[in-house]
Image 1 (cartoon, rainbow, N blue to C red):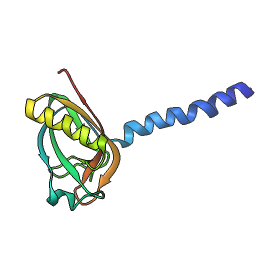
Image 2: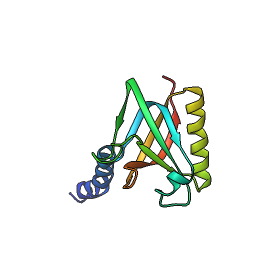
Image 3: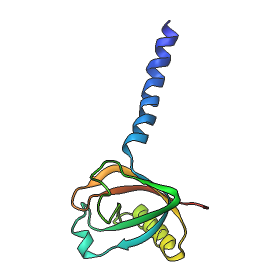
Length: 129
């Protein structure tokens, strides 16, 4: 009996975190970066010193799922902190995707920038479709 209780105490948080990931993080699969905005205008909306805003569109094989109804509801679906090395690298990847027309996957972190109504980017990856 103790082993069963230990199992549920250990497994339950893992199971719940997987469920909450699917329910709370915004993402875009098989998406084309259709617009990128940078500069002082957009920096004024950011919580850090600099950011980039990203607009995406998906084809029939992809999808965009915002983390909540208010996030991603404007023309900008995602926002990226470009004041860090990681943010600069991610922006470079997004610029490459934009310039080449390559499809990407984008994952949000469930934090919605209230001023832009765009979700903060957590990761980006290239897709082969």
